Amino acid sequence: MKLTYLGQSAFHVHTKDTDLIFDPMISQNPLAAKINISTLESDYILLSHGHGDHVADAETLAKQSNSKIISNYEIVTWYEQKGIAGHPMNLGGKYHFEFGTVKYVHGVHSSMLPDGSYGGASGGFVVWNDEISFYFAGDTALTMDMKLIPMTCPALDFAILPIGDNFTMGYEDALIASEFIDCKKIIGCHYDTFGYIKIDHAAAISHFKQAGKELILLNIGNSIEL
Ligand code: NI
Ligand code: MN
Image 1 (cartoon, rainbow, N blue to C red):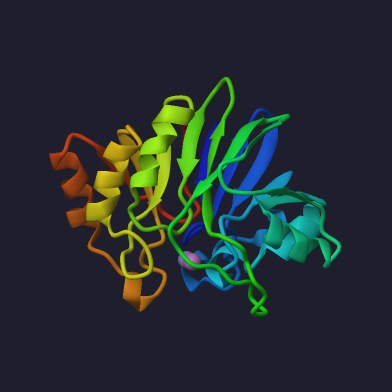
Image 2 (cartoon, helix red, strand yellow):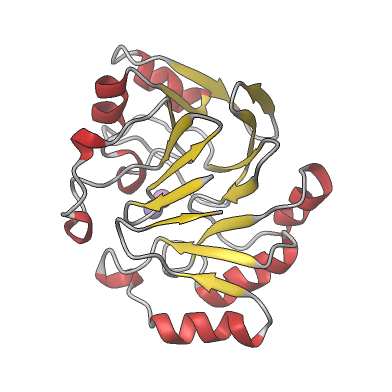
């Protein structure tokens, strides 16, 4: 599969001939100015929760590709009222899509949609198929519930964890999270976009390295094969 970083918590994943976009906030992110959202294809848009820094471009991207939103019931219902199709889930549930299985898992965070509507609980996703298994944590604190992931899902090849602190885990807690989920390869997100979450990249990377783990900080617009 191919993973492309689009800034903040936004990622594009290509797996099994399917394009997935996670938590798109691109056009409002000055750090992602070189990303042209009109070229971003999606079959599904996965939204961890309703905050603007995760959903800002979801409507535009869903309409331009006629894609479906996968999120919790409250968020999917809100987008359905805008004429966008979706697949509603709730915490702890999984569903077998044609591209793989998606489990919507607990995040410890708040949620509200951009117009103030109730956004339901905040979550993350574990996605797996016969080529890959990964965890996209969304916005979350470190939580013991992460220990349920290796107990209930296939072994993870990598995980995308927030590391910017202040609104979510910082990189120190993300290292503990990587132990809880039993995963050695971590891709950082939710850092540097605003002042509150600016981090020292070298310190974060070396913190993981000292524990025998890998923290990957992708440049915005760059892709890796996993
Ligand atoms: Ni948030
Ligand atoms: Mn956020």
